Length: 90
Image 1 (cartoon, rainbow, N blue to C red):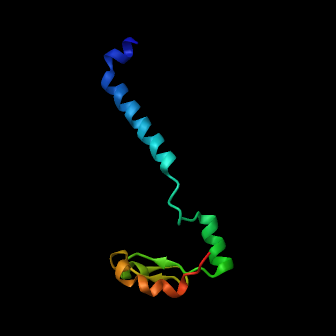
Image 2 (spheres, helix red, strand yellow; image 1 turned 180 degrees about the vertical axis):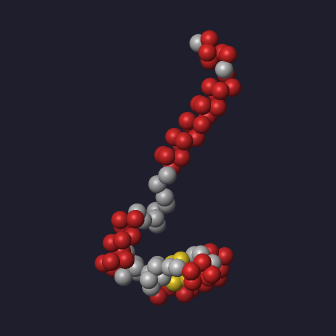
Image 3 (cartoon, rainbow, N blue to C red; image 1 turned 90 degrees about the vertical axis):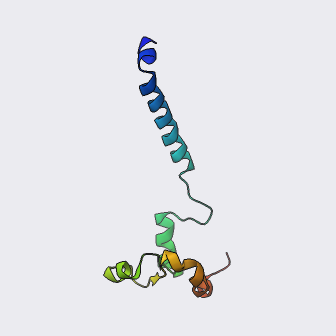
């Protein structure tokens, strides 16, 4: 108990840090539309999924996955209509 009293600041930082790490690990699962790497691989290989690369064009030209479409993140909202043909109802 003496250690805690003498090092209250260090203990507080450790408790806060641990709490933040725990909160991040609990919240880590992504939203409803997210897929795991294994699910993405299955979608690409079995269901002809369309990949969207949201990097800038110069980064896309430097290297990208085969058959992926480049729609930069900054213009995604304006170009979302281009994705309509690839939507399926599940």
